[in-house]
Image (cartoon, rainbow, N blue to C red):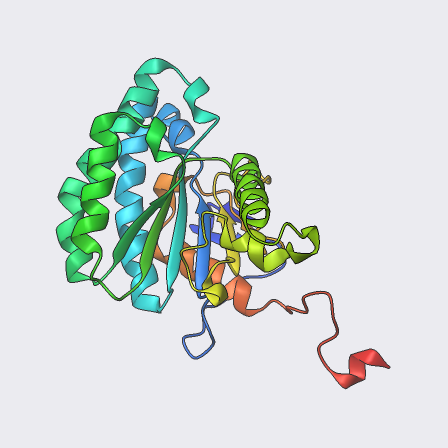
Length: 266
């Protein structure tokens, strides 16, 4: 857990501060649960929507910095299938955010060679939100750099159910042999299936705001992801904290259920 120490005016890992190493690999795919916008606003006696607006400014900063660091896919949890339960005024504001965000940020994304993708149940979004999403993806489709992948009206359990239905239909129409179903087939039908196989699963999952749960996000894809939790509220998350998160990843011993070398097998 990354915690803020006022006396040092910096965020520090409980087990020791990590320093980002440029010469070490960075995660090819980073996923972020952007949490804490509402609390950020409430702490300043502002309406919750002010936190969401400030959070979009953080998205811009983190997107550009992640791209500069060599991250190939940045997946951001923007709106879940459960977020419709929030007050109507807040939901309406959140549905307008992509419109304002893309209309102002797409020129910068084109300059940065970043391609936009949006995954989720877009058919249930308001028409103006759908139009903004489709416009951003079309305008950046020829970019060859980092993929900025928004999870919008996304829920992992629903995603898995949809994938299972698609797999069932595919098998029924082809061989009908249940033994042909495997992990690769299921992964192909998940919403990250548009990515190359080696980029579909995040190597690093970050959650801001001090909460330590996954909240129905990429449940299949994060089976072997490194998890990083920070007390920083999303509007306060900055380039330095992103590097600290990556530094933590660089210090992990990733074994994927196996042993790393012959000495460990003895």
